[in-house]
Image (cartoon, rainbow, N blue to C red; front, side):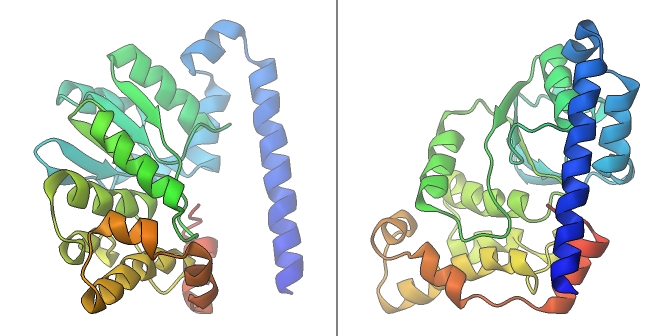
Length: 245
């Protein structure tokens, strides 16, 4: 049964991607450039579940110069620009998706820098991702808005790193950004992000060291992945009901 479900999911994804590519090919060039075709909006609102984010963006303030949220609509990007946001960090990465096309066009229209920095929600963070996040947070222009699809998991991971790197918050305090308050369900596969920070806290309790020193000298992503076990019921909620990435 599980195998059939996976096959169905892969087949559905292939059909969706083929449909999205067809939208690009059929749309006039000028509409593609501004990302404003009706089909692009339909893809964003219906396929990417943006209709729910229009009602609730899951937006929260991290500091005077940083916020976190779910995938914003063009209207919400315009609001962010008027509020002074200079950079939007898209944690989903560049993708063939109506939400991304609309976001790219809206950022260009409102003078907001769009930074695509893809991270994962169901994998032990790699050392390259962690160092890349540090360099990215050091070089972007503030104020910033960090977002993923739902504002729960990848936005939570990056918010923990932001608070530790830029605000100097201890990991024990910063990791509260991974919380059910933001829709993060630690019992699912996305709980590997909690396990990552908790492993650091356990190791540094035995031998104190700075977070990035631990990343460089102790942290083993493969071991963490092998040792983490999620709950089936939680994955059914996150993957089946909430349709998280």
